[in-house]
Amino acid sequence: MATLVHKQAATGALTGLALGDALGYPTEFNDVPTIVATHGPWREMPLPEPARVSDDTQMTLALGRAVRTAMDRGPLTPAGLLGPLREEFVAWYESPENNRAPGRTCLTACSLLKDESRPWQDASQIHSKGCGADMRVAPLGLVQGLSDEQRAGAAQLQSALTHGHPTALAASDLTAHAVRLLAQGAEPAGLVGLLRSYALDNRGRYHERWLGDLWRRAGDPRPERFIARGWDECLAVLDRLEQAVRTVSPETDPCLATGEGWIAEEALATGLLCFLLFPGEPLTALRRAACTAGDSDSIACLAGAFAGSYLGAQAWPAEWADRIEYRSDLLTLGALWDS
Image 1 (cartoon, rainbow, N blue to C red):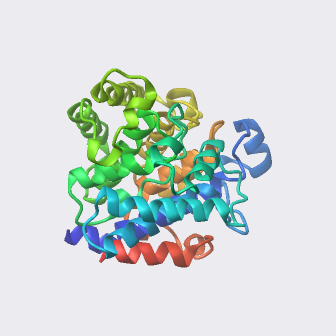
Image 2: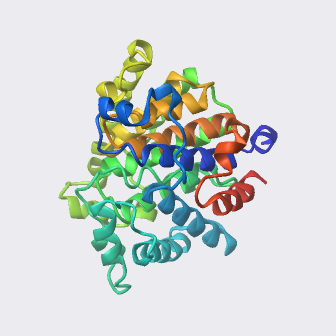
């Protein structure tokens, strides 16, 4: 715990997530030659001015506020988290600042969540495994005092409110676990193996207390079959990641090895790959993630969360960190979870 507090992992992770988001926001939807032609060599990419973020950071803050509200009222439980989470997601949906190219799945689900008489499971987009839930889950890897069951259940619940596909649930759980491991001091060289073990251990575990009967909407015969489909896809992408870490040149677009990041398991893997290629060079990791042909802002925000969790707040130079949009909100949540 002393190491976690000393390095300010929560502040580092949230700051890194937002910086990656701001760096990748202008490059999303462009191929690498176009990015280089517009922004210069990838290793020298500057932080945009102003350093505006996308819906990735906005929804991360929404989740963080919901978790804070729930835990201010007592231990984290499904019933205690659901209300604040639903309120925060609807508030994001209705906000005039929700103008940063948000994903269709989040918009559709949050519109349905406005009807409080509707069970949240009926709002969930059960066939979507887009990266929208994965990119925002980092706070659940940073909150102190949670049990493994609370962290996993909450990570999957926050995904399920919008992205109900089992791979979105499993990838969100796995991302929160990766953030927690790095915050606690796990070495990057062993991270993929730790994640593989976690995925195998949880492959047949359906968190019914947190998810209710969500599985029935997917047509699977049993809840265990439903969730195993998601873990199997995550295990497959971890295989690709393990190979990529050993063989990929840093000068090559990481998306060619682990996917473009539009779907949850590929966003996790490609964000991790960018971090693992440069575990001691956080700005280089962010720049590599932002100079990709895929969902650059989501890949870069995940890379930033991993790097910040591992290296702490000192990873980010003040001339970058002080310019990021929503800086005060990021610092407030970071200070809460670093203490």
